[in-house]
Image 1 (spheres, rainbow, N blue to C red):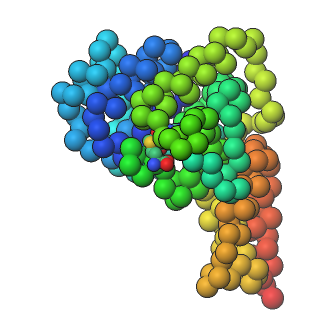
Image 2 (image 1 turned 135 degrees about the horizontal axis):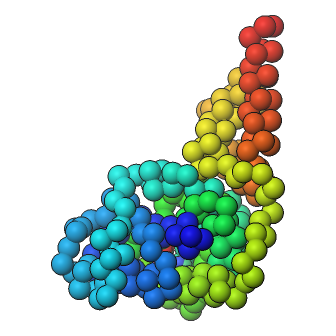
Length: 242
Ligand code: SAH
C-alpha cells in the first residue's frame, strides 16, 4: 500500500529502452506505479525487451498528456537533477529523499520525477517540486543514464521502506494538501499580491518561486490551508468594500 503510493514519473522520455529498463528497475525494488508524461516512440517493442520480467509494470504504466495530470493527488513531489541547482529548490540527498517519500506515502500519493534524457527537467517542471535530489557523481561527467538514476533512487526507497519501523512518522498532523490544492493556493496568492500592489506583474522577479519554496517547506495540512485561503479571500472582500 505504501509503496503503491510512490509514483515514478518519467517526463517526456525519448528512448523507449529507458522506459523498459525503468520498469525493471522499479519492480526489482518493489515499486509498480509508473507514470509516463508524453513519452516519445511509445509503446515500443524496445521498451518491452528491456523490461524483461517487468512487463506487468510496463503494461500498467499510466500515460499522461501533462505533468500536472501525472501529479494529481500527490502531496510531495521530488525532482531529480544531474546538476546542483540554485537555491530555489531545497536539496535532499538520496537517502533523505527516500525517507521523505516513504513517510509521505503513508499519508497519500507522492511522486519522484525524472527528466528527459537530453534536457533533464525544465525549470517549469522543477517549479512543481518541493525538493530536488542529485546523485553525487563525477564533477565533469555527472549525468547518469535515466534508468540507472531510477535504479539508484528506487534502491534507496527500498532501503528506507524496509529498514524503518512501519509507523506513521509524518510531521503533518492533519490531512495533507494535494498538489492541485497547493497550485490553486499559489494562483490565489499571486492574484492577491497583485491586487495589493505587492507583486508587479511587469517585474515579478523571483517572488512567487521564493514563496512557493517557503510554503512547500512548511507542508501545511488541510485546515491550515483553509485558513490561508480564508485570509486571502478576506483581503479581497475588504478591498471590494473600500
Ligand atoms: N542534461 C541533463 C541530464 C539529463 S539525464 C541535466 O543536466 O539535467 C536524464 C535524467 O536522469 C535527469 O533528468 C534525471 O532525472 C536523471 N539523472 C541523471 N543523472 C542524475 C544525477 N546525477 N542525479 C540525479 N538524477 C540524475
